[in-house]
Image 1 (cartoon, rainbow, N blue to C red):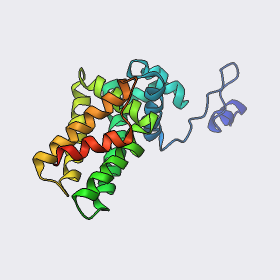
Image 2 (cartoon, rainbow, N blue to C red):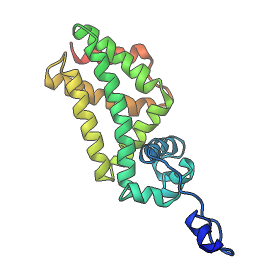
Image 3 (spheres, rainbow, N blue to C red):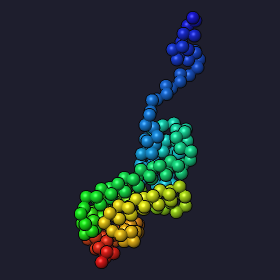
Image 4 (cartoon, helix red, strand yellow):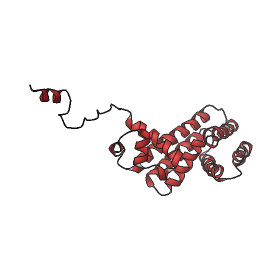
Length: 198
């Protein structure tokens, strides 16, 4: 066997050819792209969450985004689904851990304060999702699933009509708190929640 053939067998390129970068074993690349997309959205908004920006932030080749996701909307939907499931899961935990409606309203107020309104990243991601969903059907499906899951959690303690009204108030409070220069205090938020169930 010639030296050149032996080199090729070992993966060494022939003389004069550039060395190929070894393929990185990266079984969690898809999940990392999703997590990185959320980071990019939180920092630059949906408008700044391009294939190129997400690939660069994740330190992967640009082609990885289109290999794992058929479109940018599919990647954004996957990222926002992770965020929505995290927040919805937190609400489900709050609702499962309380015995009655009064405690459920207190828990809902704490969920808002801890998991949404008091968490700047979560608040920004929620508002970015709301705005993007107005124009992108794939993201509208994410918001719809999130609302249905939230209502089911609230229905552990409230009838379906009240659960829907509470969920709508929560959505409005998120936008109000984000946009207002004089946001409601936690006590005012709690008072608004209790008024619906009087």
